[in-house]
Image 1 (tube, rainbow, N blue to C red):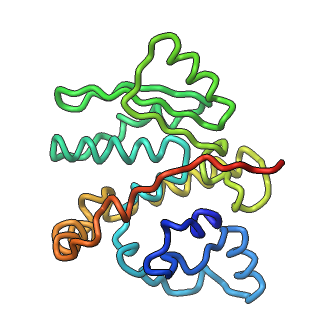
Image 2: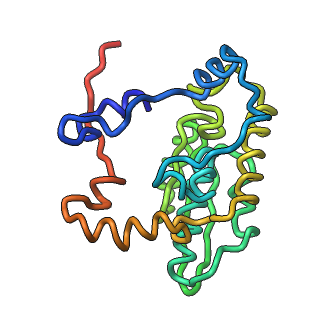
Length: 216
């Protein structure tokens, strides 16, 4: 994320879209240094549009969560209903390579989850055997971002599971579980983007990658 914030296309008129990037580990260290008791401080909403984020965004931090969020949104768009929780039970189970077929209305979506780069070999084998997918989620870190480089040190599987469990609990308690239900996102698409022709959702939400030569 620190590198991503410095990309040229994260600039508007010479001004960076991102002021600074702080990892969870750095934030935890700052909290300890200042003696902040986070259990006894009042909550404040984030600045817009982040204040209108849904719990689907929270799930993106755990392996399988991003794909679940996409399928949720797909289901809501084409059926007008929320996807049942049982639909994703297999996605939340273990295994470095997971695949599932979702039946939504008269459509079928075949989705694969790659949990850690070592599992790319299993994906490659499945594709070579004839498997085709509508969506493939690849998480570099085992378990997802809850086990990412900026998280507190420690590789205990129980710690990773506990972090994932907290995210699933947050998903259960959030009032907004889909971006399509967020008043802030609805206003962004139906009003702000239409009123400002120089801004498009593709410019805001899409990115691209280029091959870099790195000296090892």
